[in-house]
Image (tube, each protein chain N blue to C red):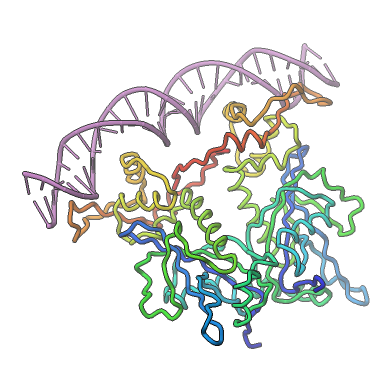
Length: 245
Length: 245
DNA sequence: ACAAAAGTGTTAATTCTACACCCATGA
DNA sequence: TCATGGGTGTAGAATTAACACTTTTGT
């Protein structure tokens, strides 16, 4: 049996990219544009998440991985399936209906949503065929379908998860400074954190390893570089059962 | 358009029920039984989760609610969509193939899995048409399809969630004793908790309200009864941003 | 020398952990 | 009266929270 598309099931990917220099948590979206036949009228002009249908011989994870690769060329990034969206009317706004007519899309498509974590600069948007573009997660453009809601739910999941799992390092380069980690937490959570307390806490973790290196090419005092060791983390980690309701 | 079944999308429900008297966290599953035409051979004899296909005019949440109601008669129970399962081979074990032949089932069905929280005694299994049965979550029977994995992932999600959200009370009667809450936490998490510390912690919460009532009909010293106030919880609750990685 | 970001210590408050016995009740 | 589970207190340890100035470096 040849692999075929499952036309009513798709995977949509919320690609989070952190821009270290602007300290901005971004989402990668692609352009959706359609003119009337006479080109007199712009029918659709907004953005959507990248996504695609599932093939009959693929796992859902495979689909997500494939979709990310096709958009960014990247593989092996952190990914998480966080929610399925299947409301009967999730694709039925006027613009969406116009768009669906031009695509091989079932009107009642259920999508399995994933999010990915990576660094903005890992993605080369120059020769991108989908007119992909980064937007700060707190300044999203007009989005088609129910994709704004999908992004917001992904963001909520990320906020919670970054407090209890070491996924923050997926958004940072291999070598980072303590202040960079703090800035990232502040960007994601929208809070400010005391620098001394944060430093102490982080540096005391056995899996935060100080390198024999400092920043280079910075115009002020270069900071100490650290790395995160997954190996040490897995060894040291122990579940805590602290009830905090 | 008449509502029709979407044959390749289903919702499966992990129904968790807590049995206060035996202090057991149980899962409700239904019998799957099939004999050969000559009745000489038992082809399938195991259990599966309750589930059903999604109708074209339903949300996924609606489907889950409907499935629970059909099995138990209950509505308004706590429910959570926790994961979608869509591996191409998730229904392709030999027994599953035999079963599917007798059902209107697509071989490549993706299921959106939910779990429900309720009390075992709320469900009347006497006049149940599906031969539904409770099993302790740590002593599950042989399960068809990928349903054992689904249950285990639901259980993991529940373990995590009960530490940070007040869902524990969904598994308890409206009026409960502190020790009943402690027993339940211990059952779910598989740990032992110090009674004095636990009591103090819980009683100090403003949303744990001491009633002017004690247990009745118990054969020993009757315990103080409490209730959980969602109203107070929502008012008092404030997100904490404690980074515990 | 100066601008900018890196880096540093202390104290009080809170929360968590460990631990063992008395009490009230119904049988 | 006795068996059973309900209920209680304290002290040490660990963690968190609050708070402001000095140091280092490149320009």
